Length: 510
Image 1 (cartoon, rainbow, N blue to C red):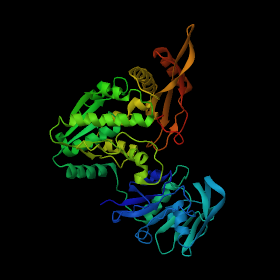
Image 2 (tube, one colour):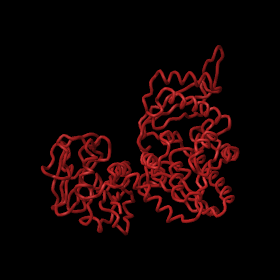
Image 3 (tube, rainbow, N blue to C red):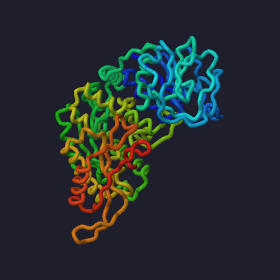
Image 4 (cartoon, helix red, strand yellow):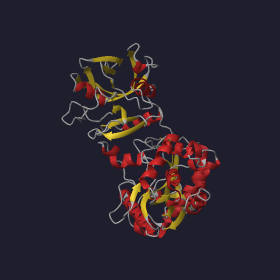
C-alpha cells in the first residue's frame, strides 16, 4: 500500500501547487476541504495545512478538527496553517506592521535541524501574509527567521508537528522542494513509490474490479487526456470499451479526419460521429461563455446518450477528466477557494442518462498524464500534442458562434499551429491557439478600406495549466504569421499577440 499525504485546503491560491510539489517527490497527495477530514486516516502518513486568504484572528477563522492528527500524524502548517497552530495553541498572532508579500531570505536557521537539512541561511523564500506570529506556544521551538519575520519556522516539542510562515510550494522558494522532502521523507518516513508504472498497475486493477464485464463508451478528442484514459481502459477491459469521436463542428481544421486516422493501429474500437450541425444549431445566438460551455456539454451528453443506445449493455461513460478540471470546477474538491469556470465533462450526468461515470485520470495533473502515457507506450508525438479545450473553438470565438466564424478561426489557427511546427517552436510551447474577437477594425488592403475581424494569438508555457506564462515568440515569426493570416484568411485584417500570464488571466479567453 502506497504512502499518501493529506492536504487540508483553507482556500489558498497555492493549495494545488503543494499537491504538485509533493507528487514531484513520487509521493501521492490528495486535497480535501479543511472541514472534511476523512474518517479513516490510515492511508495518510503525513498531513499538510494550506494557506488561506482568511485571518486566524477573524470571526471567520476556519477551524479544522485536528484531534486525530496533531501529535499523532506528522503535520506541517503552511502560512495560515502555521498561524493556526500557533494562535489556537497558546501562541499569539497579530497584524503585521506591513503586509509581508514577496521574496524574503532566511536570516537564521537552527543548527542540526533535520527539517532544514541541506538548506543554508540566505535561502530565498516566498511570503504572502498580512498577519505574523508574534509569540510561539510554550512547547514550540523556533527553527528559522527572516529580517522581518522572527518566527518564520518552528516545531512543537515532542511531536512531529512543524510550521512555516512562507510558501515552500511556489517557484520563488528556492529550497521549497527540499524542505518538503525533508519533512515527508526524513521526518515522516514516507516512501517515494508513486510512479507512472505504479499508477498504471494500480489503476488497471481498480478498473477491472470496478467495471468487471460491463461495457464502457468513451469520448475521444484526439488529445492527450482522452487518449491515455482510453488506453488505460483498453488495458483493463479490452473489447468492452467502445470509443466515440464526435465532430462538434468546433474542431481544428481537418481534425475529425486526422484524429480518426491517428487512432488506426492503436487497438482501440473507435467510431466517428459527425454531429457538427447539431452543435451549431444548439449554439445559435448564444454569446455568454458559461452558456456556450453548458450547451456544448449538454449536446455532448445527448450525442453519447444516442450512441449508448446503439451499444448493447453499455453501463459506463468514460471521461478524460483530470485534476485541474475538477479543481477549477468544484473549488479544490469543495474547499473554500473560488470557482473559476465550469468544464463540460465535470458535474455529473442528467437523470435520463443511465450511465455511470468512470474517470481513470481524475486525480492526475497534465504532466503526470503524459508520464503515464509514456509508461503505456503511447506515441511521443501524440503525447506531445498541445492541450485543446473540450468546448473547442467554441470558447475561442468570443460572442455568438456561426459556421462562418468557425471557418475563419480554423484557417487562422491552422496557419499559427503549422507555423509553430515549421519553425521548431511547437515543442517549446505548452499550449497555443487563436481567438476570434467580437470586434471589427479599420484596415487598408490595396487601395480599398476594409472593416474586418481582429484575431488574437496566444502561446503559453506551463507544467500543468494551473499557472502559465506567455511565450516570448520571435518578432520575425510573429510578423510572418501575421502577414500570412491577413493575406490568406478572408475577413481578418488585424492580428494581435496576447502577453498575459495566468494568473491574473486564464489561458483561454472564455
